[in-house]
Amino acid sequence: MKNTFNTLRIIAIAAAFCFTGCKSSPKTAATAPQYVTVEAPESPYAFAPLQMFVFPERDFPITKYGARTGDIAANSAAFAKAMAACNAAGGGRVVVPAGEWLTGPIHFKSNCNLYLSENAVIVFEDSLELYYPAVQVSWEGAECMNISPLLYAFECENIAISGPGRLAPKMDFWRTWFDRPESHIQATRQLYAMCSTGVPAIHRHMEEPGVRMRPHLIHFNRCTNVQLDGFKIRESPFWTIHLFMCKDVWAHDLDVYAHGHNNDGIDLEMTQHAIVERCKFDQGDDAVVLKAGRNQDGWRLAMPTQDLVIRNCEIIQGHCLLGIGSEMSGGVRNVYMHDCHSSDQVYRLFYIKTNHRRGGVIEHITVENVSATKMLRVFEIDTDVMYQWRDIVPTFETAVTKISDICIRHAKAEQSEAIFELSGDEREPIRDIRIEDVHVGLLTQFESRTSFVEGLTVRNVVYDKMDAADGNMSISGIAPGR
Image 1 (tube, helix red, strand yellow):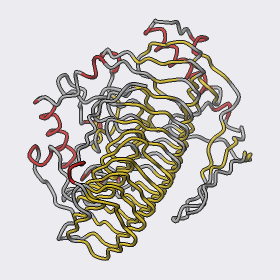
Image 2: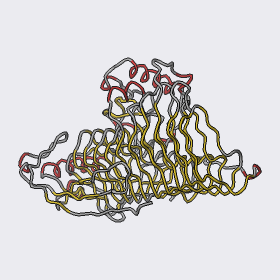
Image 3: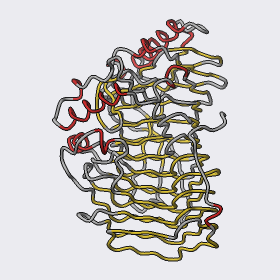
Image 4: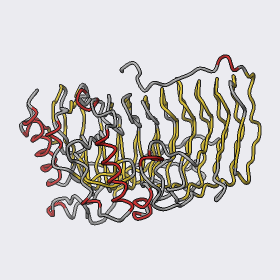
């Protein structure tokens, strides 16, 4: 195992300063930007160094634009005005001072770094009317129009959230949406049909009353050069950090806690060229998740999730350390996770999930130097994961996922029901799987099971003892707050 390299250097780029998407002011068009280089030479997949934008030393405090403690309307307006001013000036920091700032959703513009000062807390009010008008998002792998995420960016370049402060949404209202009532199920049927029949995303309206599709905490959509640096998260209505169709991402030193329903830690969906490092995740669902769209939407957008490095992260609780799928129709490839550990328990260390509607490929994935205390499986591949969709919606089109060149090595578990379980599809067997140097202390059910697997290599996979009497474990999704 190679040591992790994280060489950083500032590089002045003597090129025209030209942005796309949320465009910067023309008066700064000749400014030469600077970049910091973030490297991952240890990746077996030739990871090119990230060139991350260095924000100009200009501050735009929200208090200068009318922010006042406890005033939702004033604070919402202040965030919008500060973002606009920062963008017009060519970039800088939108500064949130110490204190508690109650607000509605925050929408980003290019070249803006939302900086959370020490002891600054952004508290997002959970009044539904604040989250209109609808914006374009991806919800569980399907593009649609929905109520605004709490922090949202669309087609922006050079954006960041940084600083030691905290994001802490109110959850009283969003918790009432955790259940999936019949009105929600009916809406998901409609969305599934629209995706399957090519209805444009802007005409898929899911913000209507009764639909109850919860908003993401952070949803950056089609953005380039994204930095998430050092801040804390305490709870989320839905997926916590969702990067959709983004490129050049550096997420580091985050402290993320969210133990509600569907509270993934970070979802990289159709996102390319990213490093996630030195983060702490404590989740009611999966911790680090790789996705790539659902069914026809994934095939239509045709942007695989690829060229990722996840390193030196701590997962306290979560359903899995690294999850791929089940929304992965655009493909997932060239992923390297190493030196990530769970200090409590997970259901699975490494979990790949898909089904016969997804299609796509999952290939060239390596996970090594990972561990946890208790779990159900160290490693699992399941090609028949349908959840509630098996009976709710029909199969419009069958497309079996190709899975190949997957490796897990140097993995440890104090206790597990099983070491590995690989369930392939007879029509497209799983191929070229390597499981090496795996050590489990207590095994409570069975060592391994496989079906429809070709080219399986197993080396030095051991356990100390087997005892079914000690096999109970559960992760409720609710944990003590931090």
